[in-house]
Length: 128
Image (cartoon, rainbow, N blue to C red):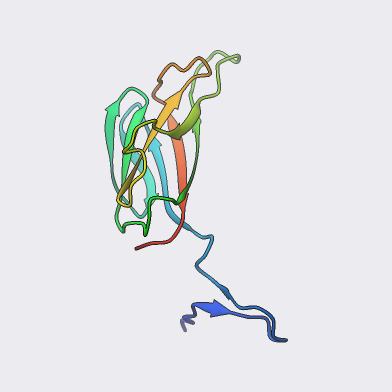
């Protein structure tokens, strides 16, 4: 099998070149907050349980700056079909985002912290 390694590409008819690594997720994690388990990950070395609904994810390879983009979603298993959908976001602390980690929170619509059965998060930005 052959490997093709490129950093930039451009259309054959000319035009503007672009980076093949810009806009690509640089970290991804799927966790179970109830069991404090890292289910799947890329560029995440560990997670830390900081209390109900609070987890910190540590990068394997650091980000270039702390201004990267973050998106998260979660699922809370319950037999109640009218149960609330959890809100996943960055914690409201000064240490919520750094070049080496990010801290998330999981809350109900009433701002009650909860441990979700499944939380997925993705980080997009440049690696250091």
